[in-house]
Structure formats: C-alpha cells, structure tokens
Length: 226
Image (tube, rainbow, N blue to C red; front, top):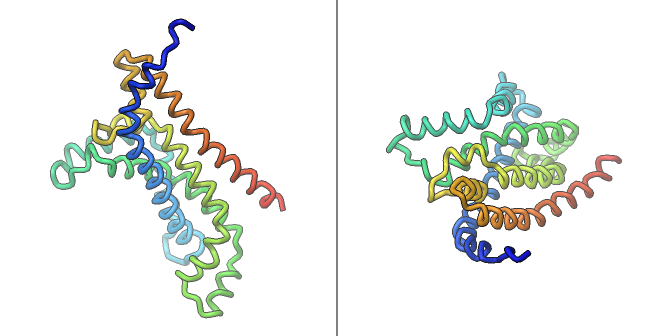
C-alpha cells in the first residue's frame, strides 16, 4: 500500500484530454456509417429484385474471413505505396474509419438481415398502395420496426471499436492515436504505471456503455419472446 500513488493518473490526464475526443468521434462515426451501409445492403439483398443482389451480401461478409492483422497491413501498404500523395489519408482518422467500417460491416449486416427478414413484405406493399415511395416506406415503416435492433447493433459496434487494437496499431500515428494503442505504446516503452492507470480509465469509461448495452438487451428480450 505504501507504493500506491495517483501520480500516474495525473501523468495520463494530458493524453486522455488530447485523444479522447478523437476516439469518441471515431466510435460514433464507425457505428453510424456501418449501420447506414448495412441497412442499404440488407434492403438490396432482402427486399429488392436487383439481379446479382446476393453479391452485396458476399461483399459484406468477406472481410470477416480475413484476419485483422492481414487486412490492416494490406491497407497500410496500399495507402503508403499506391495512394501516396494522391489521397493522403495515412495518419488521419479517416483511414481508421474506413478499416473499422469494413471490418464491422459483416456483424452489422447479419443483424439487419435477420431483422428485415422478420418484417413481412405486406407492410411494404400496403405503404406503396397508400402512395408511399420506397424511401418513404423505408423511413416511416421499416426503420421504426428495426429501431431496437439498430440501437443494439450501434452499441455493439461502438464497443468493438472501443477495444480494437490489432487494426489500429498498424495505422495510427500521433495524429490519430486511439486509447487502446496508447496503452500498448506506454506498456511497450516500459511505462507500466501509466499504462495501468490508463487501462483503469478505459474500464471506467466503458461502464456506462456496457450498462446501456445491457439495458437495451433487457428491453429487447421480452419483445423477442412475444
């Protein structure tokens, strides 16, 4: 107990202030963009009659078969040697957003596909008979019914981004450092105390998200049971 100190907490305060806003923005953007793409893919695959529409489902699920370390290294080489100065995304939040969205798209589409299948097409036809366009049907009929699933999926994807290390560690610089990578850097450079203190901060910040996730799951349970 004599060696217990709060000095490390004061030391990491600067890191948290600098990187937390960027990291939180990345979580919100990734979950939102991923779900937006997942809804579009699911609508095409489940509801449309577009020829070859199953290719969208294949594209969405394909990244799940690729290890994150391989995917991250491939994106790293592509941005450094192919894009180069044409689109300088390396070291920005946008490259992390891109890889996180691609990596989590398979999770999101599994959930939106499963929920959309359970919504009968008669509702779509009734909306069209009433004069609603496809966009209006999606916005006023389908999305409200998908809302519980979308809320659950949004929280789940945000949590996956919150603890993601493998993809981020290959693609981060000082300009787009995430908190898990910062913990890794502190630990790798011998800063065990600051790394432990920052890990406690990450756990404390995760508690409200996990509590919200748990609350949503409890609310969805009775609805699914009926």
